[in-house]
Image (tube, rainbow, N blue to C red):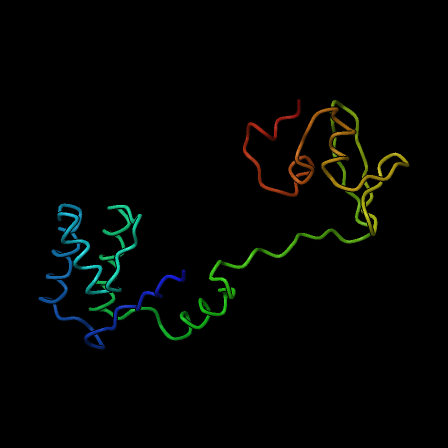
Length: 168
C-alpha cells in the first residue's frame, strides 16, 4: 500500500511578513508544545494531508506543524531545492545510497601497529600485505592485529570514535 504524498504548505503571501503577522506566528509556534495532540493533528490535516501518520510522535507533529505555519507566512522551499530533493529520491521513495568508496589501484596504505609499520598495496581485486593477497581491508586488519577490526577504520579512512581509534 502506498502512502499518500503529503502536500507542502502553500504560502499565503509573498514578500515580507508584517510585524503583527510575524508576532502572531511566533506566538503560535511557541504555543505548539503545550497544545493537545488533537489540535496538533488538526493542524497537520489542514497543512499537510487528511491522514496523520499513524506512528507520528508528538515531537514530530510539533516540528512539522511549526514548519508548516512558518512556510505559510514566509513561503516554503524554493523551486530549485524542491527539484533537487525530488531528483534525490529513488523510485521506491527511499533516499539514494551513498556511492561506494573506492581506493585507486597502486595506492599504498601505511599503519603502525605495536611499533611495526605495515604497508598495504591496493590491487585491482584486493589488497597485498607482505606478499599475501586479501579480499578486503578488514581481512588485512585482522591479519595485522589478530582481532576483528573494520579495515576502513583501522587504516584511518573512516571516521571513528576516540575509543575505537586507540592502538591496542
